[in-house]
Image (tube, rainbow over all chains, first blue to last red; front, side, top):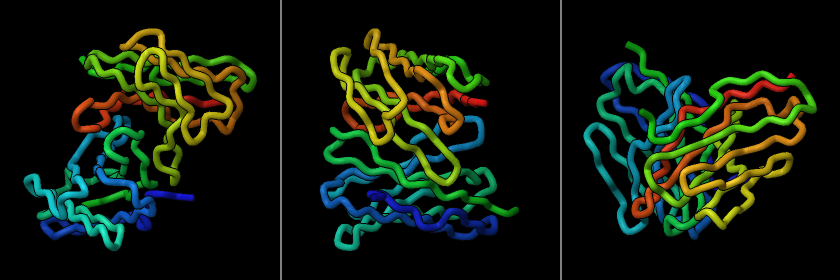
Length: 112
Length: 112
């Protein structure tokens, strides 16, 4: 049973627009959430994280929102740029002491 | 130089052969992981190790074994490779305070 779900396998958006990537989780013990970005032929790289004591974390053009009651988080990219095109993985863990559980990823494309 | 190095980067082998994927890290972290990526399935955990004397099975450990030779080295073995083990394999290590995973560049394995 999937504990971290990314229900959109792919997403395309025009350059300059806002993009929203979504992630849902089922394990109520998860309290630390991360987003990773993966380019072809490279390993995933850390993008942004949020702990359950917050509902928002911002880093430049990237903002992650956490809705604990809905067990939902989202990654907002504003504005979207062609270099943002990659596969984005949502991940979660419990107290940072358990291995990260990943979603299946969303292939994100920014059209110039 | 990469903080997490995987060898080989690419390998083609035949069914029944023994294969070892090696991983070394220069970050001095205790925790190391092996993940497997398949199209549409995201990143799935094979094995993880929280220190040299600790080995734990992940979600999909069947058909795999690991060895933690030192703090910096964590190898993954396929004793008798089969075609459905064709995948992209990632080694990773965790920052002890943030829980952020640092990935290697991946080892692409093809089993014919």
